[in-house]
Image (cartoon, rainbow, N blue to C red; front, side, top):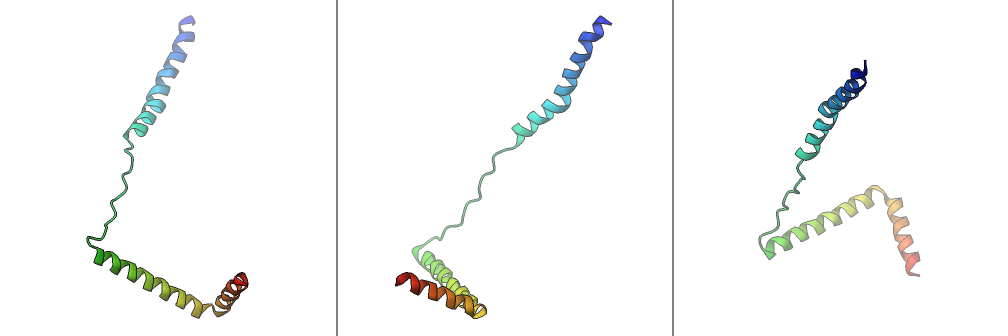
Length: 86
């Protein structure tokens, strides 16, 4: 009976180590830090200017489309800008 007083906690610690701590340590050490993918940069200045122009054009077109779909919101926006300038 006295041996079981020492044996039961020892078995509990061993089981805890085998089923909880060891898998947890494997999970923590095996997860490699994620490396962000490299962004494809333009190769020349002409390509950079072309991409900036395309982005600018698409932004303008998006704004025009939004204004056509929401004319009241667009007028309120412009009125707000005019009031801020005054």
